[in-house]
Each structure stands twice: as C-alpha cells, then as structure tokens.
Length: 257
Image (cartoon, rainbow, N blue to C red):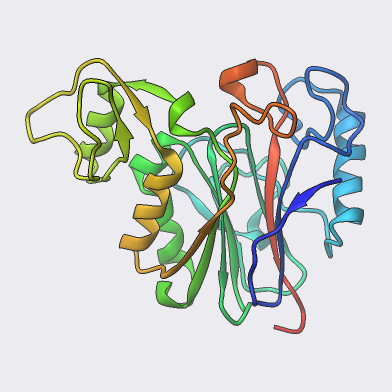
C-alpha cells in the first residue's frame, strides 16, 4: 500500500491513499474505500481493514456521507457512512478524521502542536458554499496556528467547466482560479460584476482551495501535486471513469500531542 504523507512536524498520523494495495475488482481496483459506489461491500471492508493496519491508524476512520455541502462535524458525532457532512474534526487523541474523493479536493488540517486535526472534502460547490471557512471557524485554534495539505485532485488541464460555474463561485465571493483559451489567466477576482463568462474554462480546484485557505489566515499550506484524472495508475477519477472507487485523505491526533 502506498500512502502519500504530508511533511508535517506535528504529532499526527496523516496521509492520502492511492488505488494500490487493495482487493477490489475492476472498475474499483484495487484499494477502493467507499461503500456507496457499487463495489462489493466485503472487498471495501477488507480494504478498510488493510488501511487501518498498514497506515498504523488508532481506530477505523470516521467515514462521512458526503453531500457537497458545508456541514462540519466533530468526530465524536459521526455515525460511520451515515452522518451527512463534508468536513470532520477532532481534538481527541485516537479519533481518525477522513474524507473520500475521486477528483474533488481532499484537505487535511492540523494544529502545529497536533492538538486538533480536520479533514475536508471540497468540489467546486463546496468551495463556493464555504466549506473551508466553516471548517476553520469550527476549530478551537486560530487559523495562523494551522498547517494545511491539499491532496490529489483533478488538475485544471482536465477540468473544463462552463461560465456558469465561474459566475456561481464569484457570486459567493470565491476567487476562483481558472484559465481559458479566450480569456487571459485569471488573477483570482472572478468575472467583473454583471458579466457572465462564456465558453469553457479550466478550473484549478487546488489553487482555488489554496487561495481560500490563505485568505482564511492559514500560513503553512502544502500540496501533493498529482492530477487524479491523468494519474490513472494511482488515482481514481470520476470524470475519467464514471463508475470507479474513491481515494481517502485521513488525519488523526496522536496521544502524545
């Protein structure tokens, strides 16, 4: 099993999975961690058991039922695979926060001293609605004391959206990062007021998330630079494959924090 780890000094156990190291059959091969995508539940349970063991997690992750919203919950309130939310946090040692993705952005957060951690799932709808600011507001430490790691997600070159998406994000005050063949590179201010962009735009979810984190006061921001759409050997991509598995981003506070 291959796990991509943030280079963090905090006493936490954090990482992003790839699709290697599990038992699921195609099109979910091999380490699918989601119960809701049509995979054999027995295979998913085995994959989750392997993650627990090989990642050295203190407990099974608190899996959410993700809905592209802004609800943030404490890990203690999560009923695994049932609780509807798109971000989960904890200040309790031994609890594992996790999100599932197959193109959307997984974001892991940790206090520099490891006393609280969070995992966030954000597609363009979640970014527009404010799931990142909501998560920052829920944590019991200032954003300046947080570290963030943006995990593998779909890259701008593979993520073409219509002008209505850019406009929807701008209407919520979100500085979307995008490129277009007909518009110069956007500096993050969105289209001018009253101007609906036309054509297709390459939306950079990771850069947009980074901007929101920085605007929220998070100073230490890193990223795993891997496009889920193009890295077919290691990543699941809903846009590329349709029926497919899900990768996980996970983070746990350790007892010694």
